Amino acid sequence: MIRLTRLRQSDPLYVNPDHIERLHRLHETVVHLLNGNEYVVVESPEEIVEQITFLRARAIALAARMAMDGIDAGSMAEVRTAATVASVAPLPAIDEADAPAELGSTGSTDGAS
Image (tube, rainbow, N blue to C red):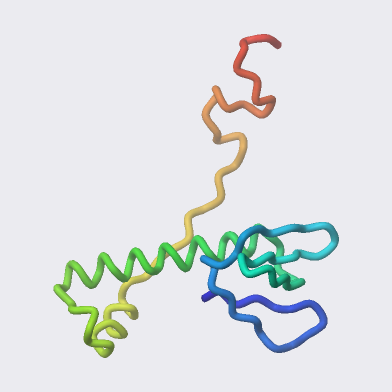
């Protein structure tokens, strides 16, 4: 689950990211769920995508740690212990200047200037 903040409400909103159909932003971000519900939140679409990416990376790191340690998922105490050591560090953002030359800022691949 990811934690979002509804517009003009202080209580957190927890959403299963697998149920998000799309994100729409005009002035505020609208989260559209597969069941038709919509929530207006203060987080930007980029922040929401970052939360989802981090959540999934953490799940993969935990699964890898459990596999390395031979932990059975049936024991929640062992899963909690593995979760404390299966850390995920965010990577630095890629600057457009660091992008490969063929993906230059114009997006043109026909060789014309």
